[in-house]
Image (cartoon, rainbow, N blue to C red):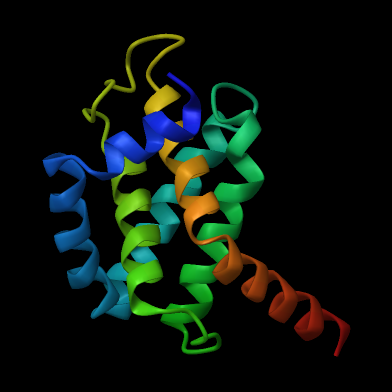
Length: 139
């Protein structure tokens, strides 16, 4: 099964539906949302040369977008996309998801597939955010 199809399949499951419900709670609490991003960034940083290497930059873009949203610096992203992004981050943080993270060599395949699928699904929103980041750093 191709990575995008696998990511889509994960996103349609009941486990991920629970992540979406939790995501709404986080999006309504900036402190909780920032703590989530801190935890996810720490986990990603520890795996950036290993199983997450291919999606690391994409994951960092998701973290930066959510952080900018939580600070009310960047609000040009649809709620539906935010729910999907935060649910993906929540999924990434869970050590016991579809493929448990502790399974050496395989544990992050589902995380990487879901991140890739999410990036593809919200591509225009991520592109808009990256353009905003670029303009912000130029100004």
